[in-house]
Image (cartoon, rainbow, N blue to C red; front, top):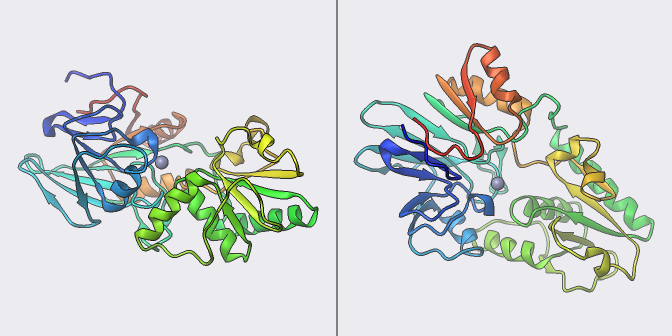
Length: 322
Ligand SMILES: [Zn+2]
């Protein structure tokens, strides 16, 4: 089969694109992180993903799909399931009519509950295409409750020292998780505008936060925590007038060099991806006959092959399967 060199996944026999980065006549979008988006002529996604993606690109035409409600096509049936990664994130199961094969593409995945309490669970399938961002045994995340305790302890200590706690978390997904954690712990939080815009969509879609959403307008109120995305530039200039400390929330915090590479004062491993344990759990429960891994180290597919499975990494620009 010819392999077009394009980012995304293409199922040629079904003429179906999954998370293509280039504009297609029709494309499925697993979630609204910008490395999964393109302004397709017709978008298939959850209503939440469509609403969040509309903040970042022009949506021409879209069909909102609900979790668990099958979309019937001539050649296949497509059904979405929660992916636990950010609002609206979906795994997709594709039942191919001709062969009876079930293909599952996880998109970015984290097993567990999202802010709405929707559980992401492994899906039984014949062919599994799985996000293996943290596919190495070094990446085993501590229990979420202990990371939350560490985040809150860091914020308290920073405030006690008379410094401004600046929590750095991606504007979609991690940002809302961080906001929820900080509000629940009783902190006042001022939110950068990009995180604020995404949080407003969460609220429109019915998400509940245990406190008030306040926008950061470049001036900090006494005693508050500032929440912003890691890439926001010039933050040292922004805070030039007062002492501040930065805390990055990322799965990469497992790596001891993370805080130096990311130029932050502290980093804690709060992740919206599966760790090594969850990845192995997924494969064990899904029982696929063949596996393609996406992103992350190639260690995970090699580990699965050692266990006798037919598992291979998808190269960064290897789009077409089968
Ligand atoms: Zn993502």
